[in-house]
Length: 236
Image (cartoon, rainbow, N blue to C red; front, side, top):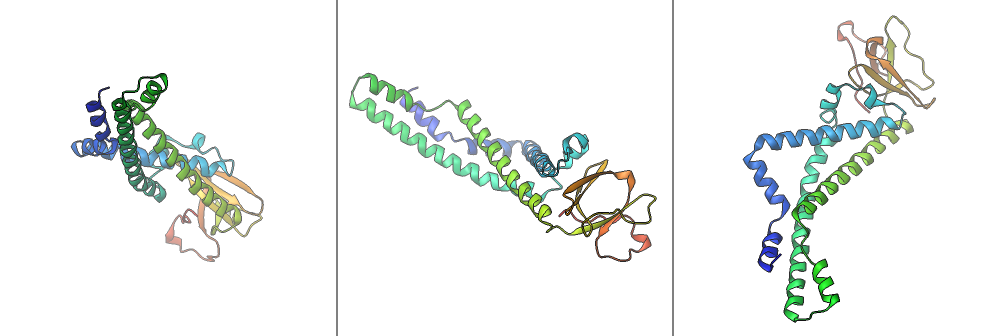
């Protein structure tokens, strides 16, 4: 690679090229953002429910995967926080490449020809674009996984400490609510066919088919209007 080619490579940062491509193809930007949000939701569900030994991926349907990220506001926060991080990595990448090019030119102009000099020139070469793109992909996936895992662990710890609001659960055909050792159950979430609840004192989770659940309401509410229908507590 010649010196002029290296200068061109230095100025060819990844992020500006991506933004220009997304401006030309707005549909691609929407698709990528949606896929990123959906993947974040799937990672969150897997990490969160794993704490309660619930095989959520096995119990989920395709429709659950498609809306997993939309149900979690943190997925949107992850997407928006990734953009400035990638931009900062891009700025550092340009700065690092400029320094490598300057060192290469200094070594070439010095006129020294030795094995050590040739080795240094080789190590100071600008990496190919495919390597840079792969490094960016690894950084984005690693950041996203860490972000989601920390958030899911935090929410799971809240449930295990008993900080989440309890709910009362009635099963179909039963006049009395579902018994638990705690003062009510903790509503973990739901997928298309199953509802997940947790007994804090017993340290166990229950997987209930949706068709078997008659009503879920926040604990402490004595009377529910007849016309209110199904009441579901918010995800803790």
